Image (cartoon, rainbow, N blue to C red; front, side, top):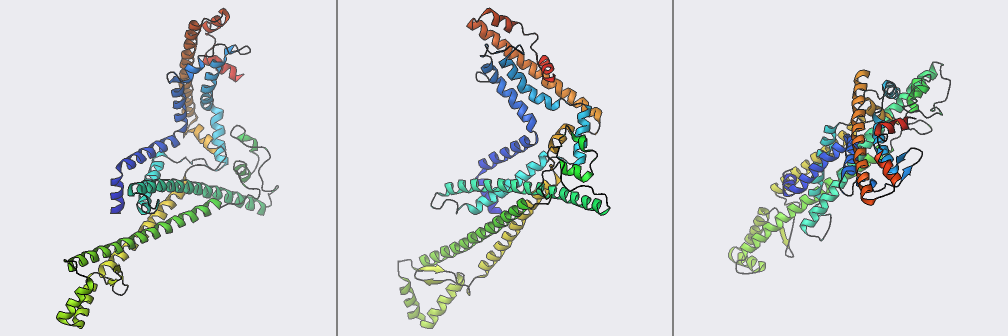
Length: 451
């Protein structure tokens, strides 16, 4: 863990950028409609190359049937796409609530922002943990800096893929619980002698707008009408199996690589120790054989052999063979054994933590988000309002807000079109149409769309 923290500290800029990107991605995921509306306004107001600047140049395209310029219609249509999503009434409230109730997801919520942030923070930790392990194996032969950058890239891809897989697995397991419930209710109904049809959805596609059309059907058929299932209405564990295989492969592979790095570090420490010993033992460049002869001459051959054994045991049971230091299993030092056992225990704990994080991601996927075909749209319409009054008040404000912005953008466009027309000097009819724009407002466009 200390090595991973040191690795993160060594790449502070990458860690800060990744953390900031995680927060932005989490916000975009949970506030997608707001982000899209902000982008629409930004794209229209951007100087010179913005949509208003480009649409204002089209002062000749005129819709004779609608009596609007094409550029004005384009702007109003873009804003109407957002307006219609908040153009809801008391009937819309009842439809959304009935849809969620029929599919068994009334009360469920999408994954909250703080959960996404927590997931991605865990991803960052995983990514740098993987990067530390893979640093020496990603791009063999490259420089150390290049290897570390490559390891970070591979680790981030791996972590993001795991987040996506675990979330999809959680959603699959949640959907399977609904399918099991459908089959259990169907079996109970059949056992009571009330079953009058096969277990299959109605031919009519059920959406939020026509959610009341299958009210007379049994509850399990209503639930089935709102789910995407196979023709046998059975559970599927394809995503779950693939995810579990992938998690096991990554956990085992990362643990194996960590073990190889540990063995490499132990071997390197022995090599360094023997190099120091050899340098100290031959200060004047004498050969090892000469040193052995000197010891034998002074103390006898047996004493020389004993001295060599003592020195071998001092440096972890290593013996000299062809000038290279090789570890001896029988002469393994206590320090080596401790480092190896402690390292492997740590790797097992890290592997279990990795698996637990993936299980947590699967649990989040099961606990949040939806399986119904239009459940997310129904939830977005309800927005958690428990009363119809609060629901209507919110959407009245939302409609007013979008309509005001759309009208302000339309006025900017019309003003710029008039300026361009004055500079170009077009015909009198076009000039009159551009000047007479009191009836071309966003409110009038809404009346046209409602027809």
